[in-house]
Picture 1 (tube, rainbow, N blue to C red):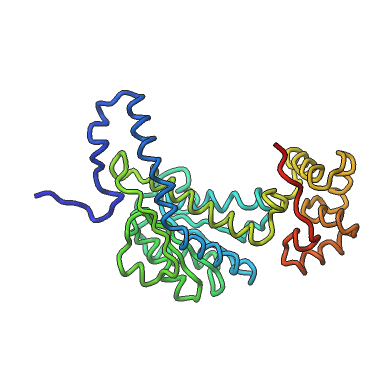
Picture 2 (picture 1 turned 30 degrees about the horizontal axis):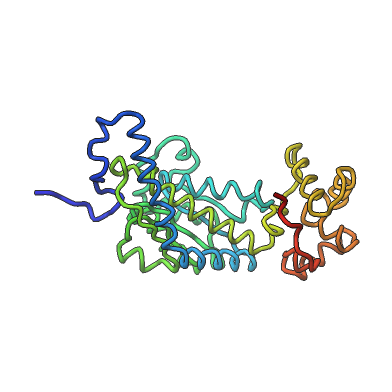
Length: 306
């Protein structure tokens, strides 16, 4: 009798059945061929991902937080995306948070049993103070992770909005507690069940879109320039000054002075320059424009130089 696992991510891939006899180049070509379908799978979920972007923006504007919850690779990807938001967009670390089954030690060493501890999900979300007004996105490549299902159940119970990123259709018991389902079906992996591969890549793409899209909507870019950053080290000071030089058409010294006057905040410095305003006046103008520079100064960013 042949048993076929209902989870797509756990099925055998007929295209890689002889991979154990392949040369290094053949292995690379096979993996690359499989990976090409990942963006297409993500693209089929464009409307659901857009709804998640809208929900994340609304969550942030009302003072809520975004939580990613997962186990194993899925949990690590959530923690990675959350940890990148503060250095990229100058956000408070509380704004986007990653919760992984098994805690921080699971980031560097597998804690396989943690995904089955239902009480662990409730304990972890309670410890992070998840409440009404927050947005909790579960990440489960197989769609069946007990820890994630319990986390979403608890989040729904306390009044938080919920989402799920999965690469295999989840059971109805999980769907019942999900407001926004994002389901890029990447199919069987090159190595059966190794969801750090295609499923992991798809998950990374989806999470990138959610946080990047929400941050853009919040006004943390000017055009496609990443302007809501804090000059907290030499590298970021140089990047900040170069952005100001390009956007404001000023020299290095004037850019440096602008940055100092703004408290090291590029976004504020741009508004100060174009409105000939003090830091307080620039911050008020930004607040009135919902944080969007273009609306605050009524001016498009400079054209892209070829």
